[in-house]
Length: 272
Image (cartoon, rainbow, N blue to C red; front, top):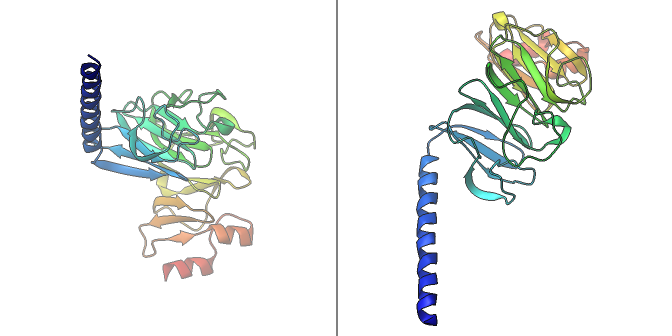
């Protein structure tokens, strides 16, 4: 009798292993088609062709969003985001996703209000960003903060604000989204860099930035109105234009001249 029980238990375990293995294989097969990948400090996430989000790597701050605590060497599904996601953005230890309906959900580190839901408690899975359940057209995330451009073309940011990176005229952390001062319409692209500066492309291709002790947005001079893309980096920022030169770095010039805008010499060097 005991031998029969042991055989039954062993058979059940083998069946469970077979089901688990099959389910895992199907999930990995479904996630093989990634359309976008974003990387944080020690984790990465992918947006799949099915509109789902899967993450892998370090999970000490719930960066994987799967409701578990262990790190993962392979992709795991972010809970509640199996379909319907159109864009993802990764910060150092926080991440956000934009849904097909224009809503925003975030997960990961909760410090400084980074998740934007107005709470300070730990969340192991994505939460809705307060006031952004619809009408968002693009998102960005950085170091415990994030921003979004609304369908009206305005900018909203939330989270860490030590150097004015939320652009609301203060250095106060915000647990829910606040309007970026003076930017209520006309924006199309937003990008956040590890230099704690955020930049947007406004109507006509103008570039406007804030953060890094600039508490409100300021236009970047010398770029004209032909900017197509922007990339704030760890200690600089760049713009792709439709002119002969394709990249301009204005951050170092800004520090030298104490005003936003590349110098003539720097522009010539970039053009070369």
